[in-house]
Length: 154
Image (cartoon, rainbow, N blue to C red):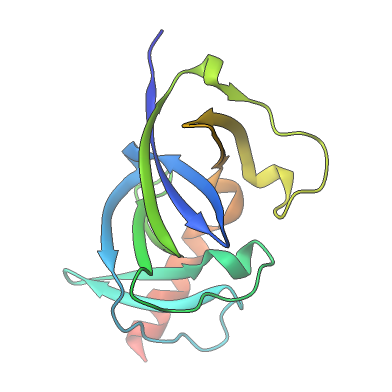
């Protein structure tokens, strides 16, 4: 049984995770440039090595109170399915878990904090439950990148 590794992070006291192979880097907080006329969950853009990366407030995308930037706030820079970068603001990075398909259970059909379409499944790890999120369902990264490119030209 092959295990897949997931990087977990904290949002509003809950633990979420994304596949570690989708993670480009984890960065401490730095100033982000706002983008006019963008979705409310798009915090802005960050220039990383000459590339403008859309930065999303994952709390707002999950209909939670907006992120409060502090010493533990980090940006996880991810690749979407088309190798486009996307940064998500999280409260803190937690663990790396190796999970097999047997470890991952389907999400219950009840209303959680986030829409069930955004959830790949739930896994038990270290006596805790980790919600595995589907980034492609959460964001139209192509659209977000187009917004950030247009803003860079202004």
